[in-house]
Each structure stands twice: as C-alpha cells, then as structure tokens.
Image 1: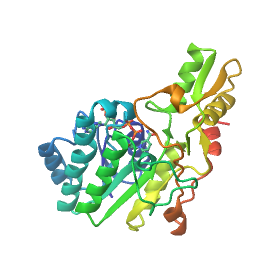
Image 2 (image 1 turned 45 degrees about the horizontal axis):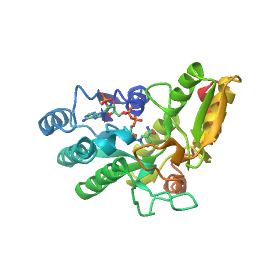
Image 3 (image 1 turned 135 degrees about the vertical axis):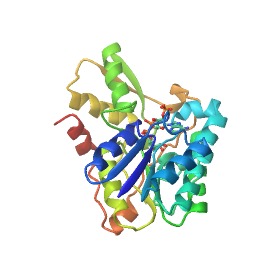
Length: 278
Ligand SMILES: NC(=O)c1ccc[n+]([C@@H]2O[C@H](COP(=O)([O-])OP(=O)(O)OC[C@H]3O[C@@H](n4cnc5c(N)ncnc54)[C@H](OP(=O)(O)O)[C@@H]3O)[C@@H](O)[C@H]2O)c1
C-alpha cells in the first residue's frame, strides 16, 4: 500500500514510518515538510502521492499549552484534520485519525467503549473530539483510533520524564487520582497496521490492557529501570495544579478490536517490561 503519514517526526508518527516501511511504500511528512493547517500544501502533497491510506498523527499535543493557545489547538487539531479529511475524500484515500482518551470526562467508573458519548473537559480534548467529528462528517472510509498515555523510545513522554527526574531529584511527586492505561507505541503501531488491512472501518479503542494511576505507573518505571534510591510520593491532581482538567478515569476498552478479532493488545505492565528489556 501507499501510506502517507502526517506528523512523521513525532513519537507515534516515527514509529509508523519504521514499522510500515518494510511492507509498504511509505511517505512520511514532519511538521516542517507538511503543515496540515496549510491547505495549499495539503492539497498539493496528497494529490501528487494519491495514497491508499493516510495516517494522520500530526496534532498539537501539549495538553496544558492548548488551554492558553486555543487558536493553535483548534487550527491544528480541527482545521488541519479537516484539510486532511477533505483531501482523503477527493483522492479516495482511507484516513486513520489518532485520537485520545481525553475526549471523555472521566466520570464513568468502568472502561469506556467506542459507543460511549465523548464529553471533553479540556481545550485539547475538545479540539481532538472536533477533529473526530470532522473526519466522520467528510468521510465514509475512516478509522478513528482512540488511545491513551503513549510512551516509546522516542519523543517526550511520561517514562522519559520520570527517568530524567530520577537523575535530578531523590523524591518525585506523582498524581495518584487519575487512572488510565499506559500504551507502548510499538504495540499500538502493530495493532493499527493489522487494523488497516481489514477494511473494517469505524471507531476503535486501542490501548494496552489493564489500568493504573500515574503514581503506580511511575513506581513500575523505577522498578523495571532498577532505580532504588529515588522515592515516589503520591499526590492529588489539585496539588499538582495544572492548567488543563484531565479525566479522573479514562480507561478504554478495546471492544471493537477484540470483537472483530483484529488484534489482541497485551497488558501494560508486560509492555513496560519489554520496553526495559526485562
Ligand atoms: N502522547 C499521548 O499520550 C497521546 C495519547 C492519546 C492520543 N495521542 C494522539 O496521538 C497522536 C500522536 O501523538 P504523539 O504522542 O506522537 O505526539 P507528538 O510526539 O507531539 O507528535 C505530534 C507531531 O505533530 C506535529 N505537528 C504539530 N503541529 C503540526 C502541524 N500544524 N502540521 C503538521 N504537523 C504538526 C508535531 O511537530 P512539532 O513538535 O514540530 O510541532 C509532532 O511531531 C496525536 O494525534 C495525539 O493527539 C497521544
């Protein structure tokens, strides 16, 4: 397949380029090469390549930054996604839109399934849900993939941040009242690679299975990294006092993926051990 990837220098986009290049003709475009808010470039590049699949992983992902820069959040995550969706339609490409657990308000006490109604509580969540609506509005052939708490070897993520902090401090404070599912980027890329070969279009939740709080996640990171001389202290979301509201509980159930027997995601702790080569 001819596959075009937006945001290809990002944490997830770069993993797609690596994984999919073996069996496909992959065209990766980073922010500098293709700004998705620039309609002219989006039209030009997509119409020249005419990809079978477009994986749209470009986004303004700074959750707190979105609160103070609503214009960029909406421009990139809604308008930019709309530009890509319209060109997908024109060129008969299948679009994969990467979305987030932050489209939910976190008030449910059991895992969210694909048919649960989103109700975002942050600018980032609103903008990403807006992108999802735009994709559904313009396209018939799409995959919307909602995932959560991504980490991998590249890019900025919670695992890298914790490992960096252990070099700078002997105590790290981490929130214990937000629960979700950490997801290892190579696992997600494998699942999406399986998904796009099915033609079972629609909305999917794809995360590693199981759940934990950020505090529990941090404790396991230190355990598998073999770091013993740093203390992890649980704190509340209020104490952390970040600009953006985050859902208290945003575990996603991979219902559609499993019902259709497309791919089985392993438990988050197994994936984390793998990350550390354990
Ligand atoms: N990280 C998570 O925990 C998480 C969880 C759930 C869902 N997601 C979703 O997963 C996708 C990938 O996230 P990620 O973790 O890989 O984030 P990331 O590392 O920040 O990658 C996003 C990429 O998009 C690029 N970008 C920003 N504005 C752009 C624009 N106007 N045009 C083209 N590219 C632009 C960024 O480039 P610059 O850095 O140069 O601006 C960056 O390389 C996103 O859709 C995100 O919403 C992420």
